[in-house]
Length: 254
Image 1 (cartoon, rainbow, N blue to C red):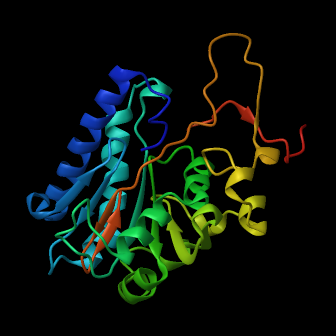
Image 2: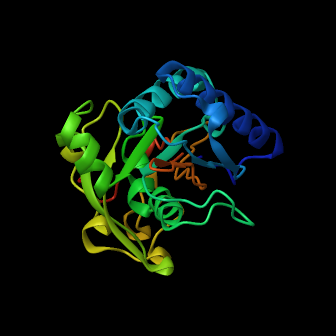
Image 3: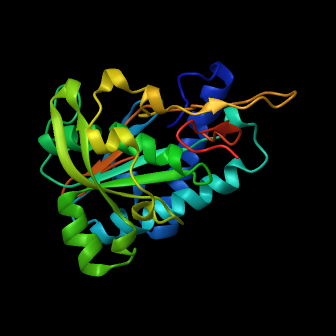
């Protein structure tokens, strides 16, 4: 969930309720039996291990657009600080279901790194009109997205998801429902591979952060970010700002 840590207690409580409701409703609409998922709650997100036999096409291509639509309905009329926006990640691989303190497995680590990558955080910021952003592993993209084309493969942006502090780097693909993520040029830090220390919580290079414009009254909400993995896996592992009034210093002013 984006912006979770900056909310007060009441807004955190409501955001958690919204996350649960959105995920249950989304699963019902696409025919996924969420009652059979192994879910590890994280407050601002959740890691879910899906049962064998779950359709990878449904998880990788139908869930994110539906979550985006349901969030759009939920967020309508809410103040900016109360909006719920989600980052989702999908990966696959073997997972131990009998771990002493969670679900051990490289697939779990991988999907959690994807959902926390600055590249995905940046994508959610670059499309302030969207309520969700999806990142899939290279394997999921080639085995599911390209093969079946339920979503247009050319709208996925190829990135190198990286968390230098975690010694993680992997090819991945980002999709933003209703947008052409590949049609937007990557930000500077995506091109040059900025370290975590160079990025703010939203994955934006501090040198490139937009500057608030004077509004002559009211409040300006900007650089809203979030944390927390939501993952779905087994053979399927998924992980589950709106700065309207800002000026990008890299763009010429008229």
